[in-house]
Structure formats: C-alpha cells, structure tokens
Image (tube, rainbow, N blue to C red; front, top):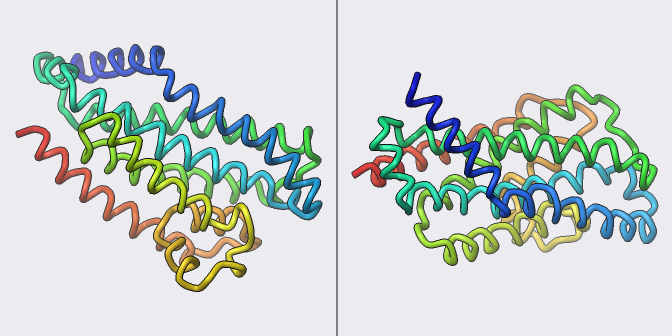
Length: 237
C-alpha cells in the first residue's frame, strides 16, 4: 500500500510540472476547437450536427498520442525508474498511473467541448448522452493504449515526438472528422481503419449502438496490452 501511495504522490508531482499535458490535453485542442469550429460551421453549416464528436476525436487523439508518450519516457528512461525500484514500486504502476492521469485530463477536456460547442457554435448535442459518453470512455482508453506503446518502445524524447506525430497525422486526417471518409481513395479509407480515431468517430456519431462496433476497439486494446506487457518486461531487465 505504501508503494502504491508513493507512486501516486510521484505521479501527482510529475503532472503538476508537466507542460506537455497542459498543452496537448487542453490548450491545443481547445484552440483548434475555437478556430476550426468557426470555419467548419461557416463553410458547412451541417457540420454543427457532428461538431462535438469531430472536435473531441481530434482532442483525444492529440492528448493521447502526443501528450502521454513523453510522460512515459520521463519515467522509464530516466532516474525515476530507479526511484520506483528503490521504493519498491512496481514498474507497471507508472504506466497505470500515467494512463489514469491522462484519461482524467482527456475526459475533462471532452466535457468542456461538450458544453462549449452548443454555446459557441450552436452545435447539436448527441441524441443519447449516455451512449455518447460510453463511446467516449472506450475511445479514450483505446487511444491511450496505443500511445502507451510509443512511450514504452521509444526511449528518446525527440524520437518519441516524431513517432507520435507520424501516427497522429493519419489518425486525424483519415478518421472522417475533416471530410467524409467516402471521399477518400479506398486505400486511404482502409488505412484509416487501423487507427482508433476512425472507429471512435464512427461510434460516437452512430445513431444506434451496436455491440459489434466495439470489436475493433477490443482487438486494438488487447493487442496494445500485450505489447505493453512485453515492453515492460524488457524495461525491467
């Protein structure tokens, strides 16, 4: 119990001083919302029906892929890892706590968008808020699982940012939040299905919740969990 509390305390201190989380989980997504929300609703008035979902997909994807990996690199590629071991804190706890912290930040950011979009741009609220937030919760978890692989696999901050951006750009561009997936070449549309953002947008904008819609998320999450377990074992050696 003492090791757990120490891990929580250490993670809290890291979060407070982390400018990356502040920028990627709040400042950039909300700035993107203010600018692009105005453009979308002016050029395409019908965009207000899916504005909340599209802005949320962008914000969650950015916060997860670009915000989480540097925090994991800071823990597992620095003296913090030695501090964990010296105090008897299991290495997996660092991964768990950073994910929980990022999850909370991304959920709060999503709620801000959910409240602000109708007020600022007269966006349409999802017809079933319960289904929407369940879809959002699943999407955030799966996005963070992919980000965790980057943070554990890459040990250099600069390279981490590079890999994060390489995945972030196609994730958002091919997800359908910028333009309908139907307008994309078939190869690009298929490529988009490799990323959680595409499935997250589809799930959050669906009029009917279907269990099979969760299968891609489940597959991605399980594969990511297996990869994270393998990477943690390598780090612990």
